[in-house]
Length: 319
Length: 278
Image 1 (cartoon, chains in turn yellow, cyan):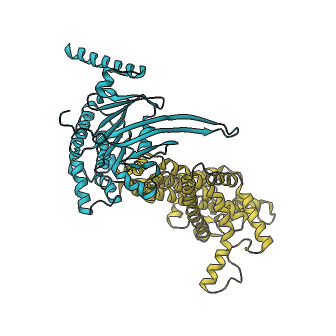
Image 2: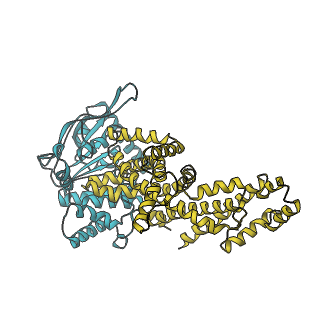
Image 3: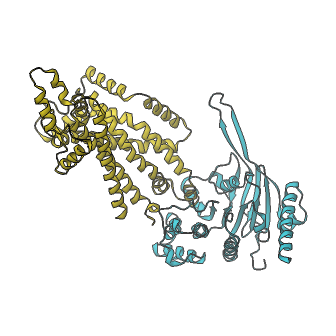
């Protein structure tokens, strides 16, 4: 329990730190949402000054940060200038879509990476390992944007996949048809993210598994006559779990940043396009809200990884 | 050594002309550079005997130990155990045969699964080899652990909660619980303080006397083993350069490397004797 409380405390500190830094950087950037209004002769400087005053843009940075904290405590996460409503409801819908994509990608990537990496480690030095290594290197050097464009081209040329969006207008009414439609739309962005994510994961699984298979405890288990499957499941996998669980936490950060880019390119209605629009419009509280939510996901991921490590490895539980 | 069993003349284990190389081919040229870890090694171990395999680091002792236990496959040569050619066994037959010969590694601490308790570690080989029912397995594990100095109150502790010496005892218990005919110990006594090493050696000798267990110590340290083993095989550069009974080897060493080993051993004994006389 002490471990969980300690980690939670650190997580809260991290999130607040990230949000404060967002405030600092946002205040350093020139201009704000209302600057464009100055070009409009129909809007008087007094009106713009009144808007500045209304939204607290003239106040000091610590003041604005404290106001935002109070707004966050009320569940609003600030006020969007562009949408003229609190940020939180705008974020939740998009965050749900981003989470759906990120969770599906993480799940599928690990589901493929663990058996593939293990197989390569078991067949170390054979042609299977070499071909696997070359494929990994090949996908690893391909930028995600190129992968996304390739999938888009395939979708446009073949017409097998929808180009952008989450649902079709004629997607159907039943839950089954709705689900099928969603699956068709998510397939493209998920494929790009899995392809971008998989090589790094597989390479890590392979090296962690190799280290585990060469460890004295695995060799000793073989010397005691313990069979291949039991050695793999009870020895090699738990031994390789620690670096992989740590990687799981870090991978969420990588995946989240990749997700935002892929969402923009492939028009997935997640946090990515919302974030980009907010930056262009200088809708500062939407930007900060997105940073807050991304940090929250990242911290939740690393916290989950820490708790998993705590559960899996008795050495960490040792006082 | 009056209470020690007389070794039978029939070899329990016989290694014939073992060769093992480790090589790596260069990426571009494909040229292979080989390092000969074993170069035509032949060795016989009789039932109930106690043999030392002495040599400096890199002489091939650990490779030989691993090949004898079929953890590594020799490039050439054969290993016979109780009349069976181990080199031809595979799969389940090999795994079943492993119950009769056990290898303990130098790094015994790392050889224990950190997720298991001492009791689970010792019971596991019995479970895998399907020896006895659960009650018998627990009883045998408890007995051997206690015998090797691990108190019952600590049987449910995980391996990392034990000291280095205790972990080696658990590793020994894990091997001995199967009641093997041959125990290969790869530098098992290295890194332990003299008192603990002597205690473990004494316990092994008692088990040897009771069960007719054959022991093969691979070690670079002649000092601890000279008074314990019946015979010594001296290894250098992947070859056994000399082997014979302990008195023969000490009285009539033939190979220059054996002579230098024995001379170093005698010098150390003299220094100790002088130190004790002061």
